[in-house]
Image (cartoon, rainbow, N blue to C red; front, side):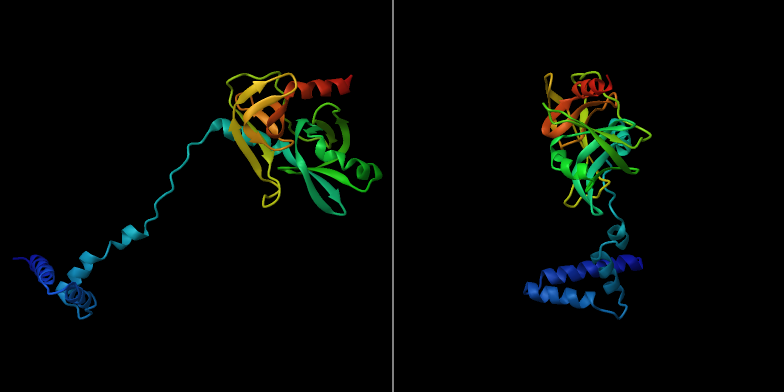
Length: 253
């Protein structure tokens, strides 16, 4: 009989003896003593090898399951990263977050009207300034160009930028879309982009309803075309892109 077979037989005999012991305490005491034996006994060494799990198996990390990449969402984030920013009020060197805003032309940004109303008087007196913090850095807001009297829409003239998000001419039903905005306090970093995918649910001349919740001033983006179909008002409502286009064209006449 080979030596390894002898050791295996001795281990089996030990387990049989412990199983026949008068009590579990006696069996466990015998097992503990053998496992603690440091004399180099071959049977004890074999038993410790059988008892301990392989060290390699315990040290190999289990890789986290990878999520499939979505090209449409990646394109949307790439577009938004340079064109969607945080609109901040600058007062005595400190920045106060107002809303998200995004470039609809190289020198024109669109956002919601309500956060700007409390800033108008300090802006006029020169006590406060506005700044659009984009992914590549801040852009100065040179003028509050337009405040809509009938909807929550504002247009801002900004220092010219390299890119913008074009306005879609309409809404393609069934197209996937996403509400995209910049993170806002508390806890968010100034550069954080937030994207919530969804679909259009209802369309009217002055309002879009969708199942993805946006924040005030964000962009509602058609993932198929990469164009803006709305200005998010917060929650599940947006000002349609064609209404934004009509107001811009009215200013240009």
